[in-house]
Image 1: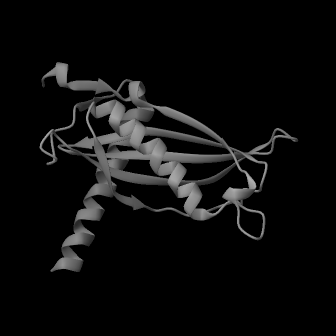
Image 2 (image 1 turned 90 degrees about the vertical axis):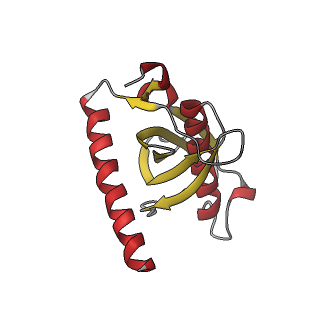
Length: 161
């Protein structure tokens, strides 16, 4: 393994904080789901770019379920980190937490797994740096990401077959 082309999982972690404004919300006073997905995608894109050191594009978003509403005035905290690298693609895990600024309480809103592909100067897929793990949690994230990737590839071959 060439360690010069490997990076620690911790070096690409991103935390983004948003406040939900009226322009982010629907007629019910809760954040548009699409706006939350946009914030997630941006956080994941920064994470992918940090890890790869080159442009990366979103390929897929898996398993996104909203568990709690996000009301106008709430603080949204988005955490993103590289879970695993597979050649030119990488899986980014994103967690969204909603904080009530008055009560100081926090609740998980949603999470998802976004797959990105690193692009070289020619605009074609390029090898992403390997992922180095240090903690048991990071090792477990890699194992779970590998299982999800296998399921995605199996599902793709079934639908294309």
